[in-house]
Each structure stands twice: as C-alpha cells, then as structure tokens.
Length: 84
Image 1 (tube, rainbow, N blue to C red):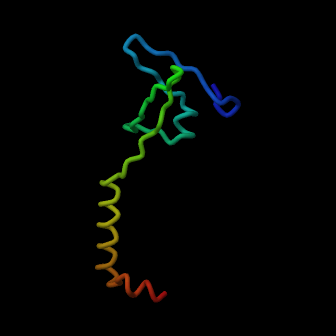
Image 2: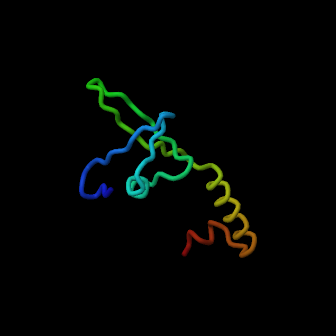
Image 3: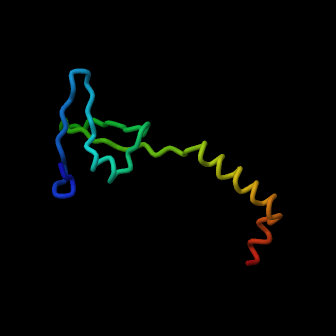
C-alpha cells in the first residue's frame, strides 16, 4: 500500500490488539525497532499518533568517548579548532 498517494493507510488490529505499521509509513516517519509512539484520543473520537523522540544517551556517550579519544590521539583541543 503506498502512503505517498494518500494521506492515510489502513491496518487491521489482530486478536491480540496488535497493529502492523505499513513499511512505507515506518520508513517515511523514521519508526524503527523500539521507537515509542504516543496515542491520543481526540474529543471527536479520532486517534492521533505521535513519535516520541527521546535523547539517545548511549549514542551521545559513544560520541563523547570518540571525541576524547581523537583529542588524545591527535593532541588537538577545542581551542586549537576555534582558531581554524
């Protein structure tokens, strides 16, 4: 089913209450494994879904470690880089 031709796509709720999000929707919205979604009920009964974008502490810590390693390896500090 192509979401690009329409603003919405349909999915069926399983007997366990699960819904498979169509692949094009996942790709276009960046939904991946373990992405959290927030469902809100509107006064008219419609549902809205929002993707929860939380800060990824593991990725941030990995980046910090990489920067520190490179600073030691090349003996370059931020003061040196500011002048460039």
